[in-house]
Image 1: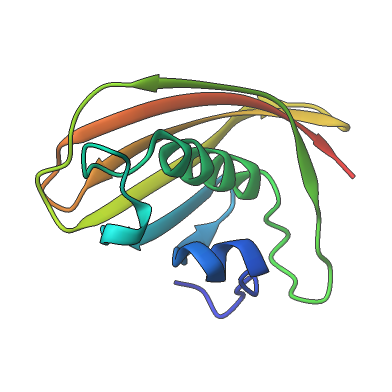
Image 2 (image 1 turned 90 degrees about the vertical axis):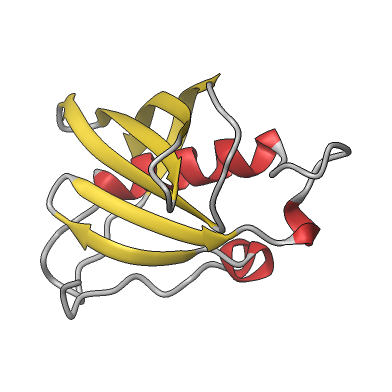
Length: 129
């Protein structure tokens, strides 16, 4: 990862997910699969999936290359497709900016586990603040 790193938010620290890569048009978060994020079936809760997808997509459009110049974005629309069940021990979410303009951008993301099982996909629309 580059030397330019976004400090973790209080929410990401609480849930335990970490930014592991960030560059122009791309962001990656990872999170261990632990009991505390489980639903009634013992699987990672769908809200965790949505959080990781939203976070990776939103950050993918905020790279500046300058640690003194931060860009923020807020989510206008988030779509999640739940696809599979994890077989591994970590969640890995990769978000990519796919287009946009001066005030909004579009992104997509995939959520897999560390064995490569596809768990969810997402798309989103984000507004720069």
